[in-house]
Length: 247
Image 1 (tube, helix red, strand yellow):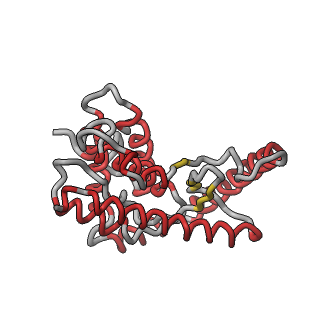
Image 2 (tube, helix red, strand yellow; image 1 turned 120 degrees about the vertical axis):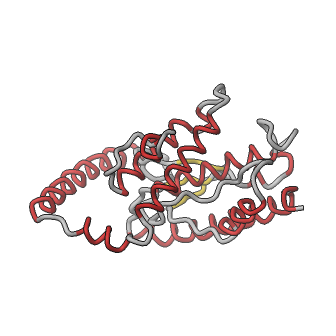
Image 3 (cartoon, helix red, strand yellow; image 1 turned 60 degrees about the vertical axis):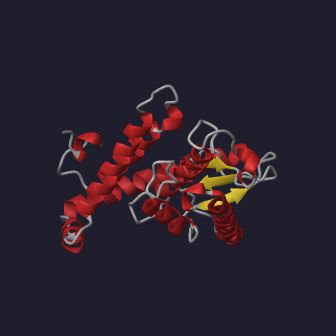
């Protein structure tokens, strides 16, 4: 039987950070949307998620406090090395940011195009016309909303402000247990993003997990974040009313 470590392609002494990075890398590469012709894609993706959850429970169980304190007490040489690496990384980020600023000066309203981001349109999903056919078909109710919330979850996991380490509950499908369906709605009806988000004229939401806003942009980004949370919660309320698994 393949171990959780083998599923994520890491060694048993991997740190929580290494476990999370391995999960994000595999989740992006093995996402069912990226492998539409692979009938096993969904099962593989679910195994990756299950392995990540299980390893986090091991790493962050009853011995979480002790383990974290041990990892924090590093030698001074290692700390100095990490500080040097951070300074190098900051310089590289500053150079990248300057280049992006030069490109966006002409007719750009959004933030730097060099930053990694996602895009979702919530309002097109507020209508029953956004899905059709059997619930688990490619265009069905379960599939459409599962893909939507998986996309949001992926970028949420990449957010610098996300310290939970566990992926949000999946929307699932027809075979999802009632317990897990309720778990999904319990989480998403109270959803509060850790990302910075922006909206454009096309009503698309730009999901920016690694953004460090300037002071003059902070208030507007916080307003957008609040509106995004409200839009998510409103959409979840509509979806819940249409979900036949709760009947």
